Image (tube, rainbow, N blue to C red):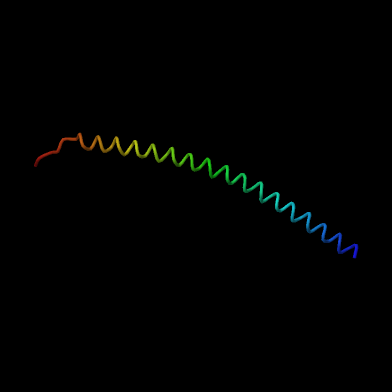
Length: 66
């Protein structure tokens, strides 16, 4: 009986360690996701600005007649 209790205690301790590891990893992944989302928004804005500039340049190029 005592060995069963000891085995159960070890399993519970391992489970708690795995839970803590998963929780820590989850927090880290949420932080990375937040940073990546912010970077993605910034890059999307830069692309939109560049596309707008290109559009302006294209409309200002005189058409050549053949």
